Image (cartoon, rainbow, N blue to C red; front, side, top):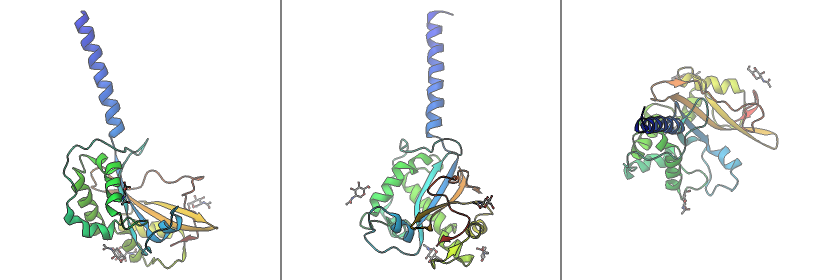
Length: 227
Ligand SMILES: *[C@@H]1O[C@H](CO)[C@@H](O)[C@H](O)[C@H]1NC(C)=O
Ligand SMILES: *[C@@H]1O[C@H](CO)[C@@H](O)[C@H](O)[C@H]1NC(C)=O
Ligand SMILES: *[C@@H]1O[C@H](CO)[C@@H](O)[C@H](O)[C@H]1NC(C)=O
Ligand SMILES: *[C@@H]1O[C@H](CO)[C@@H](O)[C@H](O)[C@H]1NC(C)=O
């Protein structure tokens, strides 16, 4: 092999490595659809919420994620189509900036840039990101408040067993396991977030692969979870 052949080989191997590395840093293999309980968000927010919260689970974000390894963030934007203004009336209801309702758009664009752009090609562009979340919450009935309410679990501040919350969610997600986040203040543990997981094409629900582990401040106990 001549010197040109050598250079060619080295270049090929190098560009193959670069493409493997970069695809693994931007790749994802499932989606987390995370909703937050407004009352608890305000209890645990470092600064007080400017407006009173509703007793509702509303969207935190739709996050392309990896079963093993880190989740992608701040990916390159492949298709520049922006969020249409006409989506805003629905977004304000299902995806409010709970601590600061004067700045919903700041919250939405942060979520899009940090997470949404990494969902390509399932998520085509910024407009598609927001349309998809509206479709999931409303048309596909992934409204967690409603799923809990279907199982007679209402936001009345009572203590619940973890298994009752999980089973209520399973009934709305083809019997798949959600991911739950709890937080504790002065010995009372509150339900803060519920995440529904689906495959990377958003075709089916899956069991959420990465629960909070023992030792995490967000681990939900088996009993006495306030909602
Ligand atoms: C709204 O939020 C964005 C993103 O966090 C921030 O950059 C911007 O300064 C905020 N705007 C106001 C008026 O608070
Ligand atoms: C979500 O479900 C709750 C509880 O049933 C309901 O009050 C709320 O209006 C629903 N949100 C939407 C946008 O349908
Ligand atoms: C299960 O889901 C169905 C359909 O949404 C609902 O009518 C029913 O009340 C739910 N049952 C429980 C136990 O959650
Ligand atoms: C919580 O419940 C799970 C499943 O039933 C069980 O494996 C685990 O040991 C329980 N944890 C505690 C601290 O009781």
